[in-house]
Length: 112
Image (cartoon, rainbow, N blue to C red):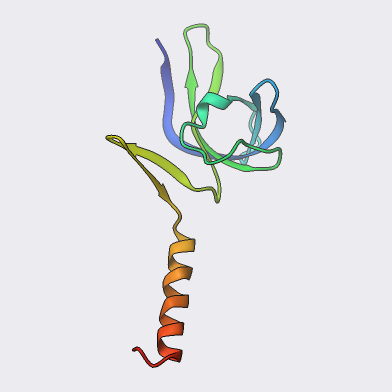
């Protein structure tokens, strides 16, 4: 059984990443001790992490006292979630840009 130490989100930089083994270490922004992170912590990431990525994460401690990052996400990446059998991707800025371009073109061609 896992024990959540703190449900707050933390921020740090991915200091090392061994993609072939699926793990690395985060350097927390508060200069505390590096945090272990496994690829399984990135449930909804649209890509695999890279060294230098900004990571938002929670901290969890297992029965043996080992601390690791969980519920992690990569800053600036899309978030994929599942609702029933559907898969939604939140793109955010891309949708806004598309709307702005559509509006400008409509104004240019006199449709608005």
